[in-house]
Amino acid sequence: MFCGTCGAPRLREGMDTPGDATPLLMSPPVPPAAAVTSPATATAATPGGDVNSGGWGASPPTAALPTFPSGGQAPEPASAGAAPGGRAPGGKRRKSGQVGQPKRKRRRWLVIAAVTVVVIAGGGGAAFALLGRHGPGLASPGASRSTPAVNPTTSNSTPAQTPTTSPSLTPTASPTQVPAGSAGWTYPKFVDQQAFTNNGDTLSGLSCLSATQCFAVDSGGNVLQADAKTAWAVVHTDSAAGLSSISCASAKFCVGVDSSGNAIVLSGGTWSDPIAIDTQAQLSSVSCPTASFCVAVDDYGHAFTYTGQVTRWAQSIVDNNGQLTSVSCPSSKFCAAVDSSGYAFINSNGTWDSGTRLDTNSGFTQVSCASSAFCMAVDGNGAYAVLTNNHWAQGTVGTSAVKVSCPANGYCVAVDTAGGFSTYQNGSWSSVVKIDGNNTFSALSCPAVATCVGADSNNNVLYDQPNT
Image (cartoon, rainbow, N blue to C red):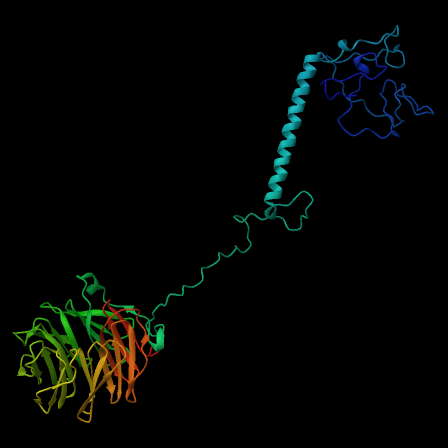
């Protein structure tokens, strides 16, 4: 038998010499029915099945396995006179020290064997732990082999799809449609980066011919044009001063005025250089119902009328009481102007009246006329004055309306200093609806009923009728 602790063949009982030692492999014991014999002693099995009194059952003769005696020399053939049981002649058993390794070698092999067992056991445990931890990609020893794990870098199967991030909820403008905000208005859209980066300039005037075709000016002297709601661009710059107002009779004719008394004119698709029409004051507002008629007003109470010649503007004194802040001309036959002292003035057929004081608490900030039969003025403090059938009436808006635009008789839209708007219809104002946070509106233009564009002091624009 083979000794697992001594590292050398061990003699069985009755063996006399190492040549009789037939080492057994580390395998399960042969069932008792099998007899193991050596060629030298192979005999027929006795009725009890014993061979050399070893107690092993009979089996067919097999070739002898090689032996490994100590000393590394080939063993001598077994003596023919050896007595049964493996004893030497004379019947004395050999001492254990005469065969095998010394005891210290046995201990060393024992230690080595123990360490080997520990290492193997530890590695196996770690392997099973890894298999258990990462089981989804690896098959366990008893798992089915019908679906082997596939290396994703070499597999020909369809690669796993990377999850895509859900679309952002932030509204994104498109060339044909911009997202709607409150009450049918679009969300504020920033359009004037040039003014924002130039000492904090802001949009100061708007003139829209349709829901999408607009011109705007800013306090930095820039003229912006939009042919779609998302396509604003600077198309001209007033080199003299900041622009305060713009009015367009068509896409081919516009007039802008600045704080140095100059006018710039778009005629036939070309913008003029600044033209000095007021050498005394700042121009505050302009209105052009046609390409051959415009009126501009300044903060000294003067009005300047254009009648077709770019360099010729006729001056007239309108207001001796305050600064004219706004003018609106629905036709060449009729205009209305308001001032900072609460007065309103009417020009009929080229002649200005002496004015009517309508607001004793504050000055008007803007006036808008749909026709000679209907005008609306607001003061920025919640009061308004409305002209119908040549008669002015006063009332309250319900908000600090600073800009107003009236595209039709009896219909107006006003915007305030806190991001809200209100609609005047059927003789009364609607409740205020927030559409622009708490921003102050700086300009408003409504080319048709329920079709408006507003601009705020942060250089944003907002559109009513967002789906047009």
